[in-house]
Length: 193
Length: 193
DNA sequence: CGACGATACGGAACAAGGTTCCGCTTTGCC
DNA sequence: GGCAAAGCGGAACCTTGTTCCGTATCGTCG
Image (cartoon, rainbow over the protein chains, first blue to last red):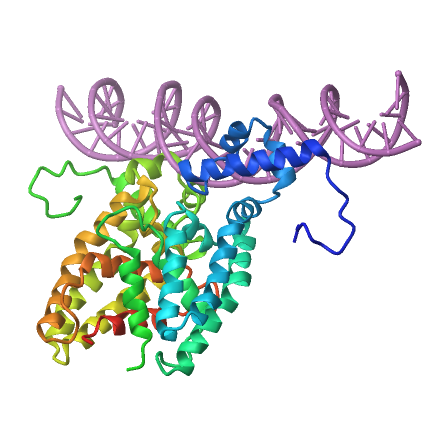
């Protein structure tokens, strides 16, 4: 919702507010790395040297903060989809490569996959943002692969995205569990029989 | 651990203690259905008409309570494995059937799949119990299927179990996500190429 | 049957984390 | 420089888990 290039009158925030917002993003990014996306609000505030009220003013829900921190990477992932498809090679390979990017992203963000699948309403908009941004890309790749006859038709992008997200949960807790390998099994299972 | 036929001296609990334990199990089962396995301790205590201290005395961690409530069903699932294998039919079919049982179990217990994959130390023994009981069964089924040449060799039962558990997360939140179908894709992906 | 030690109970009290709210400060503009 | 609006800080409150101890209950023994 809040975005730089909006059509409506952007009331131009105060200088200190913009400074704080930037500081907060950096502090949150650091806290997320150190303690996962569930890092206590007070910790993030302390890192940024601001009060907790300031966090809530800039980012009403945790989801807003998480989206703000990872927006660039999600955008990059979304843009990589069409690029992979255009780069030649089989559509299934492009799909697999793209899913790999997605998995890499999730696996390196402690707690993000968990948050994405949390029923906590706090994370509803997080879920929404990822879906808004990535679902069309996934759909495009799936359609291309299906059109090429490389995967069975009828696979729903929504379901695939959620499944892959789920498989990334707990990816760093036990070396015996490798999310990439398991996702690989899943993708193999989509191929035409 | 605590069992009726133990070898050590069973100090024979007081009558009211046994009564409370039973009441608590029923209250917890009801609370789990109504609010998931994360139902607040106070709610469970209130349902049972006891103080919170009584819960902690009987079930020191939430995992103990969850295990106690679902023990029978987990045992049943564990015992179904060899039975399916003995019942004839392909080993892969037996594996698929068994995984289906497991998925059905998880999907109908709100929050259980999430708890199984939680890094909260409170749930460590829950994780441990499921693994202790189901890993050998899963391993047996996998070996049979691999021996029959129906699935590729080298699939780790640990990884499969966790993957299936993960795919059951959030199974009831959106009708567009069907855990059984997705697990089906995964199992297909295990077949020999 | 009554007393007494052991066992178990209840719930107040404490800890941790999220969220709200309001008096005070800073900013931007006249 | 002064003033209104925007923004800030953090105390206070809520929810939920966990601990602890004074009190009540049980079971046994005299």
